[in-house]
Length: 405
Image 1: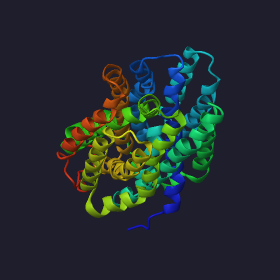
Image 2: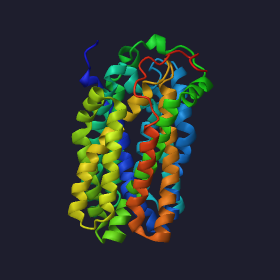
Image 3: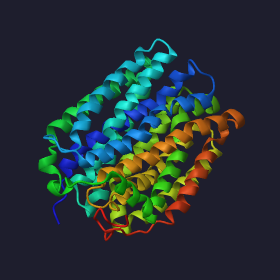
């Protein structure tokens, strides 16, 4: 067994760092910018899903295409070279909007750019690591993502009080810096395991069908859909929940949500080792159960200090779910289909992101903000039952393009 290369995976983690810091800034502050023009929470939620309509089609297609591409920069890097600078540009432009239409245009193009590189940069992790090391590798990458979220919530919330554009300038700058690090240090043809074998021609339809016809892969994708539906709506609206329901400042609410990111950061690497030790399915189920209890408790709370403490605990359980879910799906992929399965992961996550904000927004318009955590709890419970249908071991899954097709 090859020695695990922490340095290489840590450098690769700057890709996820850039994604996380940008999305965290976007989710924390974009609803407030939109609320200056729009009063309906449902409509704000709908606009917040615009990016996911692009992600719904682009991320799976880009992931699949990156499995087949072969350039002097590799298979994944060309997408980073296009997507990351463009994403940084449009993130910078968001604070310069002069009207709602201009803001929406910047939102669309920023998220279109993000969709170009997200699947390829994540697919690099299983490209660079062996199956038995992927939970560890994903924990390191998510550790970097946790740092990005902390910067967005802790520093971004303070910058917001000085100028509403500063958090977006911060995210754009860190996006560019991350691209430079990735481009300089990651060399696919040098670093990817069995690069020549991975270059073999694949049929895109076969990759999709292999995931859908594999019962465990399908139920895992449905679980991913469910827990992101529950969590994304809360992430999108928590700053508004804090302002309207708890009666606190936007910056204080954003700062509070950072406690989930802090716990996620601290527990990311232990979660990867736990997944390796006791199995990914068991780790995910433990995490889901903890999140369910947390949402039930949060439903009864209005004290911001206690909410932050609960967020700290829940961040650890959220790490168990997130750190182990993508490697679990990736190990089900036949040879040559890592990018395809990565695209499917983000396809189902994007469907959740499309459904959740307008659905939760509409429910809050009708019932009130108090419903938010019960909404999250309901979908997390569904994900628990989906995970019970997933088999725990897939290392012996037939790894050729003709398997079950």
